[in-house]
Image (tube, rainbow, N blue to C red; front, side, top):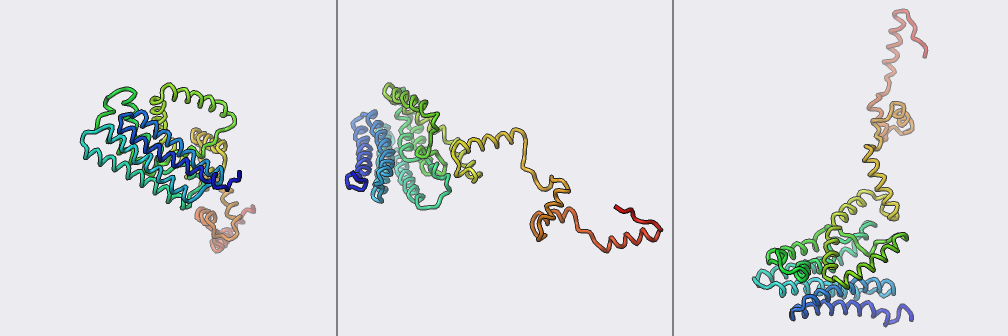
Length: 326
């Protein structure tokens, strides 16, 4: 089958529609009181959302309609659906709870709108390795973390109304923040790590089958814990343009080298610390005499005045002495 056939081009959009249906089904499960299925439906929507874009690029079936449909699906599956699930799960002060649900849904839509605008802007090469703020699937599942913990361990301080609404607002703030987070789409595993990663995938599948809620909660906590590392890595790359286009192994070697220099107290040599002969050599190498090196050296070693030299010679002659030849 050709890559340009209508059936192939329909496949990514069909996956996006399935993700949308899964997100809406989460609301229906919450209305019937089955919150485990509700969380599972949003998890399925997150998995489908991670597949539609990759399949579209793999089959060369990307389209503007698919991009717009993906954003609308994310807004409903990870913005509206989690907000309604939280609102149904923890009733009480309906007015305040509804305000918090609206805040979360609006922040999700704003996050997706900003993501679409950033696609048209020029970004440095390393920016493709990061998201601006927490992405939509991770944000939707993170907002449901109090529900997950309560279903697994029972009620506690994590299920009280103030904590849940504060957690929801904090997650909404992460969605629209400028905090960089790692993009799993750009991660590359070295050949030596393939076998351990496959073993880890098997262990993760076993944990999800036996303890699905605990595994999901642990994954969300680990994701939140990686944010300080992502911020540090982003700022390091922004300060080292020479590392933008090199493989990950060379980047790690560069960082180890810089850390070793800092431990030894080494610094880059400066012109003020160079010997006098080296300064004069730098001055002679700049023929124009107007460069920064020449201006600095001329300030340290001023040019010799011929009139002063001739007067010094006449002084030697007055007292009948000869100047020693050098």
